[in-house]
Image (tube, rainbow, N blue to C red; front, side):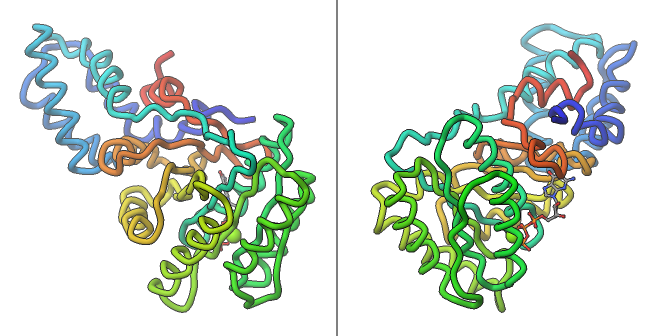
Length: 299
Ligand SMILES: Nc1nc2c(ncn2[C@@H]2O[C@H](COP(=O)(O)OP(=O)(O)OP(=O)(O)O)[C@@H](O)[C@H]2O)c(=O)[nH]1
Ligand SMILES: [Mg+2]
């Protein structure tokens, strides 16, 4: 399995490596701050989060009486760590834990669900998948392929059928089999964005009616290549469902890993997993330290 460190290679080589170079010899001056700000923004950290991070670093420099720019590397590491919410492991400690997975089309939902199913299964959990993306016939087939790979059953309905009915059937099926975890795949695109959000809301409601406190987790899948646009997508989903965490897919192919900082700071959501490749084992639990090391290339 590719590690978080490996999958941050592009991010590290594009912008964050330059930040480290900025912290070479010499003293901290106005130019250091300007360059740092520009590089962070260029690195998809987002303007708001960049400003907050730089302001915090300036405070630290005052507090600690630091004047050499070399010291900024350690301070930056510490402040990035402080910015990221601690990603507690998913709470699956329910008779039937239900995980709803949402996100725009192509973000990596179905692939991530296949990977998650394989992980949970290898941990001894009994897993069921629900193909509640009935909008495209290929979507159901794709989930079935992942179900085969992970060796877990997939509940599907008729093409163009009601996605909430699929979720409902899958819950009944999972309960009858005494499954531990049900993961619900959803559509990323409908005729309109409004329809999509209304549908997510409805699926959430149907699940909540059938299983106490469910969905226990609602994971929003973002494509790392979207960078700051991913945050705008996220806001749209927040209006429809209560998102509890992020899966950042395709980190391996992206140089925009800096967006994790604004997910933590602006969205106040933990990144739970990152996609590190296309194979079934390429999903890493998010680890803040490994992330910061991968970003700045320090170990
Ligand atoms: N390199 C890489 N590719 C990934 C990763 N996750 C998903 N992909 C690829 O991204 C593409 C889209 O993934 P899907 O899982 O089909 O995305 P989706 O969100 O289910 O898409 P829709 O069903 O159309 O809404 C596929 O070609 C996947 O192989 C990852 O972590 N790394
Ligand atoms: Mg899909």
